[in-house]
Image (cartoon, rainbow, N blue to C red; front, side, top):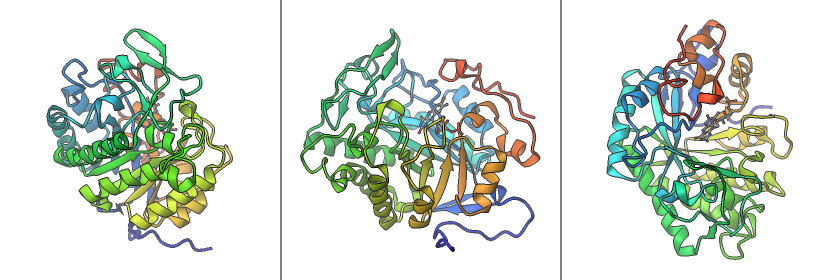
Length: 375
Ligand SMILES: Cc1cc2nc3c(=O)[nH]c(=O)nc-3n(C[C@H](O)[C@H](O)[C@H](O)COP(=O)(O)O)c2cc1C
């Protein structure tokens, strides 16, 4: 069976190198290879100054990893209420835009591309992380068994405030401004964070969205917020620079849905109509099992004509195979990129990989951030 060739991906090289390491075009972006650095929250922005990225250490971290064809930045909140963890960077203030500039410049100088992951956590937060703002969500339902990590330690997340229709429009506008700011900061585009149980995902799923207005109930209604965000961002920066991350079956952050295939099936068809550059699928449970039923990724791959970026639990062989077989156009690595600044060189050489240390994933300072050794 021949899947339609994605319109945005070049397959033009005839070297012996696995296609994973060959150049590609995703939307408007020319990539040196098809290895993607997954979005990775590292909680090392300057929180006191206003969640500002771009310290020398932050620049060095991204510079070291600029061997990826494409870097997707750590999640970057589009508004103060969209922040869910300590010291995550924002993309709503002028100082944050200035902070990102040396990061994007360093990545470009090293020959890579970088898009900003634009993020709103919705109900997965606590007022002590948002400057006192109460968490918001489609419905006033707290997630099951989710805690927020604050400066005072682990705390239960409160029951969120259900957004009014007017407030929903304001959040759409925050995403639009986030995309505009990303371009001002020198990013090549954006990835809209529609995964992992955060605000967009909360609207998509009937386990979190029990609205009875135009944003809840039917599948079309539950996808309305996601598509309004996509449309606003596309109108601002152009479809060729826009991607979205989805995790149809992940259970993380207390998210659930009675029929992921139906919801994400409709969404993928609508995204295809809009001609965005890529959809980035977390296949299975984020950071866990890939073998969860409920969504047909091969169907999505053949339905969506932009690029398909695959993620979750890939290694060298499975990544090479995914691209060679046409199951994916590119493969994103998360934990492997934390621990291996020179991941592409190591994958090309078939070299051993460093082991990531979870205890320094979110700690301040350079340890476990910029000191993993290259080959
Ligand atoms: C420390 C850490 C931070 C993460 N931060 C984000 C994030 O900001 N945005 C996001 O979409 N996913 C985030 N993820 C999920 C990863 O992007 C990825 O989906 C996950 O690690 C599975 O891929 P892997 O098996 O290649 O590690 C994070 C994962 C880890 C381990």
